[in-house]
Image 1 (spheres, one colour):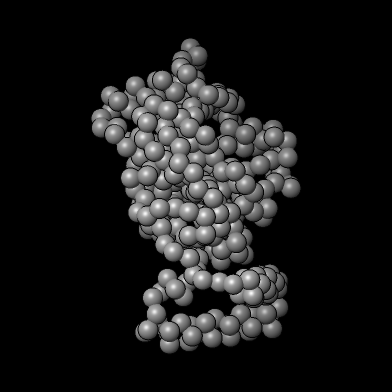
Image 2 (spheres, rainbow, N blue to C red):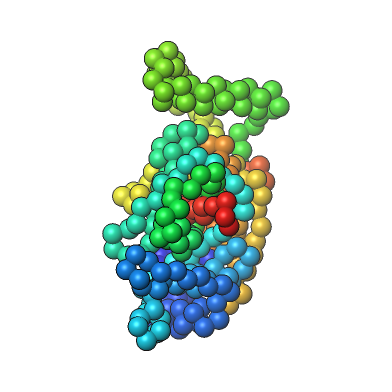
Length: 294
């Protein structure tokens, strides 16, 4: 059973029979369904059923020669609500099944962002039609979490916010120049990192680390699409799974200047989420590529 099912309100699934019944219900009473044919002329299908606004479960598989649907895998999802980045995205198929991972290099994050692709049917259609690569795409990021904590914000006035925005813009410009081989930019970034390390080393002896670090986005564990994040909560709301009645928090997060929507079971969240506070936790990153044709 998928361990992130509890993030969308299915924390009480206890055995395979209950999972089988749930998946059958999704296929028979799906909110939406998409089809396509892969390179082997096999009809792929994905059935989606929403159990609250923007959250649900998807069942993926294929049809055999007798038009019988054969279930292959399922996953819970959270549909993001905003554009996270407009950087180019590359997509690779997973080795074990007909699912895909996306990779995006956004300089604001500092690492290559790897995520689980939600609209894989659309991608396969474009791939088989020979329309890849598609330009002018953008990416909507979301994440599921099964453990999170709410932290109070770092106090900042308007002057501090403007200073931080200028510093972030300057650093982004330096990173962009460094990628193009600008030696002065590389040297400036190196000096800046050394100064930051020195400052934190001095202050960490007397201050808490979360009063020094406002936001972060770091790979977590051995799975490439799992990240430990901390970011400012822009908006939060509590919704309920229409089948189980479990409460689920949907949080709009600004992390490293990137907007991402997080979904977490209310029983797995420590603290009361409010705009301005910070969310800290581990997420399974998902992404929806917005193609111009959609």
